[in-house]
Length: 96
Image 1 (cartoon, rainbow, N blue to C red):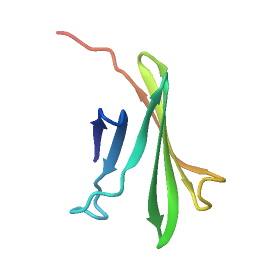
Image 2: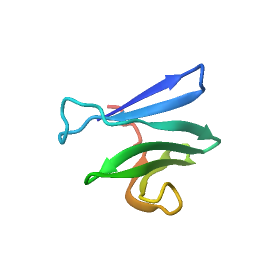
Image 3: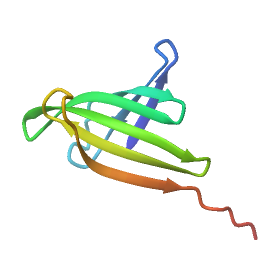
Image 4: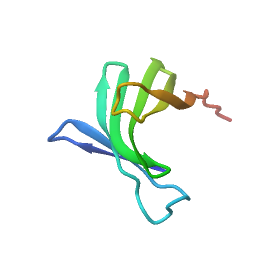
């Protein structure tokens, strides 16, 4: 589950995750925003006890579709490994 919170003073979004691995604790946020049709969000976390940098990229491809990618960096952002992608499409509404 993701919680998205906008801070109007900073003009930035924070995205927090809650999942079954830590059901009572929010993970550290990724923070960022959109410039046109591309949103970039960064945060620090750990993976298997090692510190990592996390990047979320949102791409608004059309008014009815977008993509999301997650990437990890173990070298403070010099190189990135994309490890999760999702594609979203709006379904046409059906009226009876």
